[in-house]
Image (tube, rainbow, N blue to C red; front, side, top):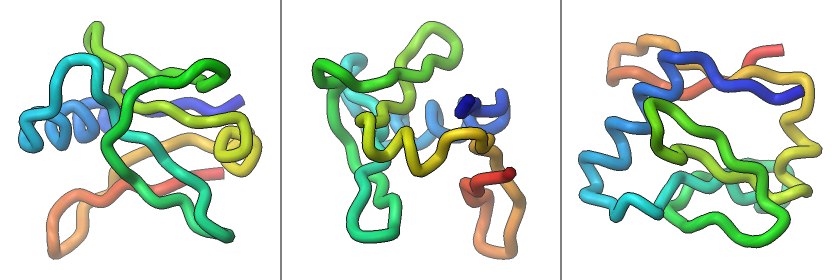
Length: 88
């Protein structure tokens, strides 16, 4: 089962706030080839949504969800700032 850590939820919330995204907008990881690409989007029928602090911060369609099944989205510090990572 895919999960997100509190740190990842806080990071996604900050990204949405910095983008001045409307409340109904979240980050979608879209499957493009073998890569997951983040973009701003709203939830569509059939999507799985992930909330943090009362806001939907992440949406995944069934194909993307299948790719990240049994993984955890977390944040790791880097020299360039925090970075989202998928952990097994």
